[in-house]
Amino acid sequence: MTRDVTTANDTEQTPATGVWRWIPSLYFSQGIPYVVVMTLSVIMYKNMGISNADIALYTSWLYLPFVIKPLWSPFVDMFKTKRFWVITLELVIGALFGLVAFTIPMSSFFQMTLLVFWLLAFGAATHDISSDGFYMLALEQHQQAAFVGVRSMFFRMSMLTGQGALVYLAGTLKDLTGNVAFGWMVVFGVLAAMFVSLSLYHKWALPRPDSDHAQGDPNQVVATFFTIFGKFIRKKNILLTIAFLLLYRFGEAQLVKMAPPFLLDSLDKGGLGLSTQAVGIVYGTGGMIALTLGGLAGGALISIYGLKRCLWPMALAINVPHIVYVYLAFVQPQNIYLVGAAVAIEQMGYGFGFTAYVLYMIMVADGEHKTAHYAICTGFMAMSMMLPGMFSGWLQATLGYAHFFVWICLAAIPTFIVTALITVDPEFGKK
Image (cartoon, rainbow, N blue to C red; front, side, top):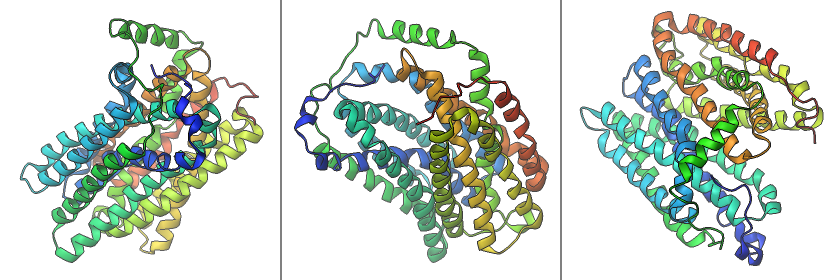
């Protein structure tokens, strides 16, 4: 597994300004593939006429590489350097974006693009492993702490770019040319050029820390992983912990798959009939900003009051705002500012409530092998989005949008049950 902290000798000789050359671009490049396979793919398939049931089922499978990435993270340690993995994977991801653009005009585009998205998801998950590992190897401990906010900010900026600017570009090109496929081909062409450029840039910009080298015995790595995983599952109340990790976002996991199709679908189908550009602004930009603000507020409050006191307010915040979608589905308002405000309220609640989830994972992982155990927690986190998302499209098609969003509100019940049952140290999370 990737080591928690390793001193990088050459970083001691690098001024802080040198770190700014690569941390923003590295974490921007980490976020783009994720938002493409999880969100941009949903909007593209909706534009291309794929049914909600198929979109939800097949794009939810794209979470699987993020679920199982702890299984192959030791192999990233064993072969080559993290720097090599980062640069090579960005080149591969750029080629895969180009392949998506190439397959979009095909008659079997749905199957072909899904195959490429599947490869992209594996590439993105492996890029996560290598870039996070490089961050820990290339920076000293005090630098890691100092730049954690910077990496988070640029990861969020990639979300804004993927869900906002690129969606807006696809919609604008569709309106100008009347060709949906052409707009998305251009978007993925832009992404391909972006990642080839990032690979070349990082070949120049990334430092070469002495500690960044292949490590581990290939004959022992599998046994080591199962030893570490065995210690994880022997943690106190582990079944309840896993239940919390899987159910805390039960409603949100279903909502996130159907929110973009709902905004795009016509009024006669129960949607709001927004243009692709409007979705890019309302959901991809305004919603992401609200999500970020909610996360910042959540972190600030936990640092003051601790996770235990904030847990219930955050569990409510991640679920109660779902009622705005019930209102939108029953009333179908056409005021873009009202729709934008409703989406922002829900996303801010999600950002605020999700903070408790992240801090709980950190609490569970604390102790021996905390890096590896946190990676295992993130696997369950990805599974919590994958499994409910898979049936959300079928459920929406069966119930219709209005009653589907009523169901989403009822889906808060499992969240409240596991929230009531878990145990949290009253002092955990306080500054």
